[in-house]
Amino acid sequence: MRRTGTTRRGALTTTGALALGAVLTGCGGGDDAAGSGKPAHAAARAERALREKAVRDGGLLLARYDLVAEAHPATAAGLAPLRAAVGEHGKALAPPGAKGPADGAGKSPSAAPVPVPAGPEAAVRELAAAERRRADAYTEALLTAGPELARLLASVAAAAAAHAFLLTGLAEEAAA
Image (tube, rainbow, N blue to C red; front, side):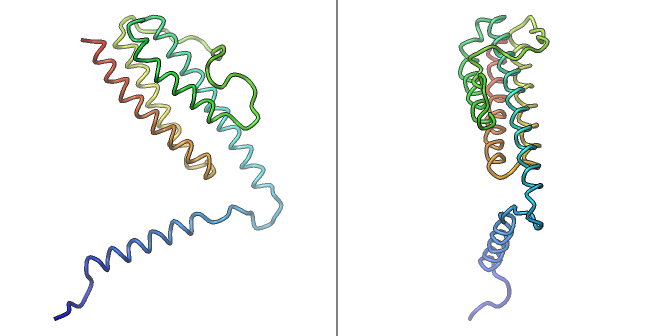
């Protein structure tokens, strides 16, 4: 005898079809109705500003990594791969055609140096907190970014969250 009514398979199929429809609807073109190009120009300016801020913030984070590694040489080996990744994020986030060192290989941005805590554990924990703030900021920026930049910001936010996790573990090792 055949069952009547809603089955689990039918409900899942319907839910999947609705989700796919919502995704496809949200991925429509971003053309403005008037055809003036002004909204597209404003969006390009906003994206460039977002990229420039991300590169500046990444440069400041690179400087913090350098200060911690310099103040606590025992942590330098653990920090090196994470610092290198932050430099790569700076390259990826740099606006197209941007000039200057986006990889952190050059001079760090001139900002008031943040005092490094005396203990390696506290210094690494501060780096972890900075990475968490970076992940949160990039996640928030996803709301206003265009599709390409949003994918990049999501990747960098995930990497920053992973860095925070790894730095927390490194801080615990430094305490031991």
